[in-house]
Image (cartoon, rainbow, N blue to C red):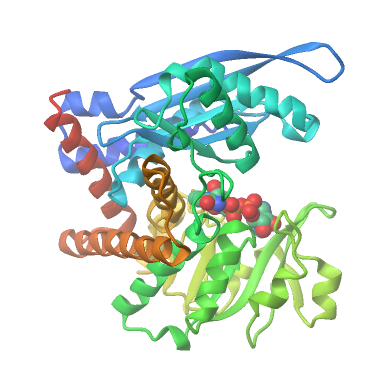
Length: 428
Ligand code: NAD
């Protein structure tokens, strides 16, 4: 969401421009990649439950599809803007390229607040969104997925509308579908596990034994829950977790110095990833201020909640023990904080690499849906591990070879791959 003067698309373009300069990209390649290839904006008129009509604004942006069909989520949010969707679409292009899956980058959205809409009204929005864009999405064109405030239920309504209009069964048009209706096993775990596969490799590189390490997490939602679970399974000790408290409108950190057990913490966490403070106290957790997760004397920090958490004001809270920051969330670190982390030689696994497990598994879902043959969870997770590991190692290799920061190396790989694709196709 843009707002208060912050424009995410301008930021995405600035990041791109800096790497384009470093790579010495030709002007035409820069002109092509700093803007989306195609943008759709449309009205979605809906009859509400009370019989009145309301018109919602919908978007789909296809930033680039030179490497394969555009791929990216659909967000339902009251503050959605075209510039937010453009930025997220561009970041999807870099994310699919860094893990080297044959997909491009896209994103979509509807300006609406699901909190104030019945399920019937949300279904009408989903179907209306598909009716407006049906000719421009498809298993071989552009493949949407769930994102902020959209779920597998929304995806199956969208798939159903697409199939009704086109008259064909095409489960590969959308990912994030329910299991049994074209969804992939392992998708729920994919992002969090992917984060830990990259942490495991980073620890090997730094010569650290995972069983002697400790970690602190921000967030305990989809990403963080599975990250903590796998990290513990591999022998790591999770010390602290911070979550948002809806009632008090602030966050708290929950700490157990001798190690948090996933099976216990999950029983006192609601479906929004909020840990119950009273129950946590009963179970012997120390309750600390929201930012305390960042101040723990641990080896690994996993910001997996929201953006802008490690910034010029908070970066100094990070203890000298910290060797790795694995960005589960999108955009948790600001450019000013990056400079400090660089100077302190902290090994950062950048967001669009660390959290790419989700889109990688979505790609697996699309492959399974297109071939109408579904893999076991073990197969999915082992393919995910291979993809994440090799993506991490390529970024690490370039970072070492060129002597650059991990985030810059990841951008250099993605942008080089996409620029090579557009040139090979003869677009510029
Ligand atoms: P989620 O909604 O399941 O969980 C969010 C968690 O963050 C909750 O535990 C919430 O309490 C916590 N939180 C929110 N604000 C907080 C604050 N100020 N302080 C402390 N905790 C706070 O979300 P998720 O799916 O786990 O996504 C988390 C991040 O990862 C987001 O940035 C998202 O864009 C990114 N991401 C998610 C996926 C995915 O597959 N789920 C993929 C890629 C990136």
